[in-house]
Length: 331
Image (tube, rainbow, N blue to C red; front, side, top):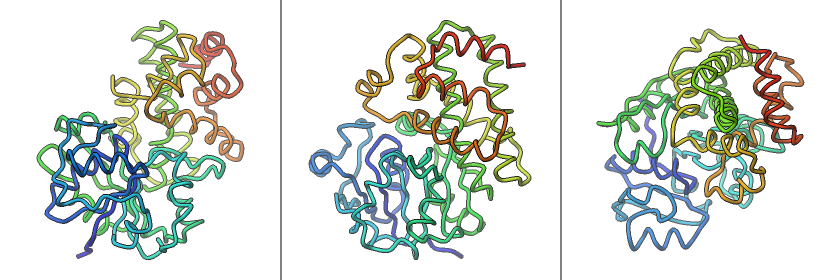
C-alpha cells in the first residue's frame, strides 16, 4: 500500500486553511508554509489564521509553521500546493530542495500566468516532478463550508489509483466525502474553466439578468467545458460528474464564490483595478480567462462565453454590449 509519509502544505489563504483543518484531524504533524511571518506568529500564539477562516482553531503543537519553503519541502514526503496560481512561481523562486522525488498534490484552481501552463505541467516542466507523482484536488467544495463542517465532496485525481486512494483516505472524515478520478488533466482544466464561467455568471447578475437566463448560461457553459476538455485531453469522462458540473454549479451560484463576486462588480460598472484592490483574495478566473484565451488559439474550440469574458476583462469591452451579443450565441 502506498504511504503518503510526512505532509506539507504550501499556502496561507482560505483554501489552504480549510485543507489544513482537514489534514490536522489526522494523527500526524503538519508542515505548513506561509509567506507572511506575522500570520505565523499570530497562529503560534492564538491558534487561528487571522486573515482567513479565523473561526477555525488549530492545535499548534501539531503544526510546524514556517516562512521557509525549503524547510517544508525538505521535511515532507507529500506536499499539497494550495496557493493562488499567480503566486506559485514567486513562492518557489528560492526553492533549493528538489521536488522531483516528492508526491505533489495541487489544490490550485488556476493556470500559471506567463507560462500558460496548468500547475501540474508547470511542476513537471520546471521542477521535474514525474506526472505519476502529481495529483489534483478539486471540488465542488468551498473553504467556508469546510470551516463550518458542512457536508462536502472532494475529488482526488491521480494516474495511479493507489496514490489517489491514499490522499482520499487522508482527506475523508465525518464532513468530507471523497471521489477518485484518473482524469488529472480534465479535472484540472475544469477547475480553471469553472472560474471563468462563474465570472460570467457574476457579470450577468450585476447587469440584472435573472434566473431564467442564468440557467441557460450555465447549461451552455458545461457544454463549452466539455468541448474544450474533450479536445485537449480526449478520454472517457462524464461531464456531469461532481468534479465538472458540480464544481461549476457551486462556483457560479454560491455566495462564497469570489469569482462570481468579481464578475458581479464588473457587471455593476466597477473597474478591474478597483475590484482587485478591494478584494482580500484572488479571483482565479481573472488570470484564467487570459490564459485559456491564449491556449485556445492552438485548439480553436468554440468558446463564446470564455471569449466574452476575456474581451470584457482584458480589452475593456462594454460588459452590457458583450453579454447582449453573447445572448444571441446561446441555446
